[in-house]
Length: 229
Image 1 (tube, rainbow, N blue to C red):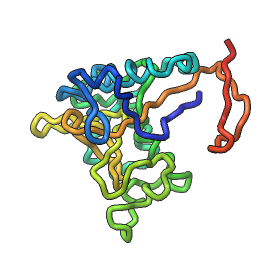
Image 2: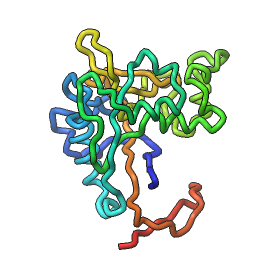
Image 3: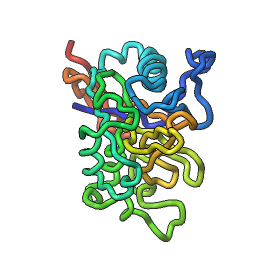
Image 4: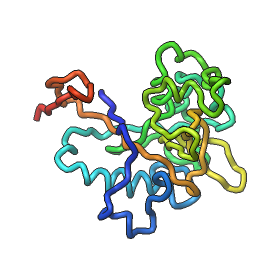
């Protein structure tokens, strides 16, 4: 199956449902939830934004998108700097629950990218290296993830962070609940789900009956697809 990840930030248009609601965008994007919980299946970002406002904005394009089983295994934020992209992938599909003890998977149309998606976008030569081994000590706040990962879109030297779909599993300080995020300096760490707005990029999978028609994937010659109905 083919996964598509939006190549820019998402916010609903000014006439969108959320502008007058109790859960609205702010700062760089959206919080994961409007309550202190990292259960993705009950989060406002999942229910109100991605699988409501964003989904309904797609119109006829909905027919290309398939329901997907999203994996929600977690790991403690204290060990994320020690993980390779393969470690991230394995944790996402593990039986380790998030702090709020939510589901280990959920079937929906729209999700977010996994931490491993970001890790794998560094390149094949870094797949067996930990995140900390990719830090460029001569680049200050920047590191090689920023330079090499094609999925990186954040603004360096800012407070901007991108949220992923993965909950964190063991953080209990002050009742905090965390989700794994990508920071502006490129590291993969954790952020408090209900007290900050994160950059959001909707992610989905194409149905298996979507067909390649033409194009090479460049901006000048994008892929063209059709669907075998």
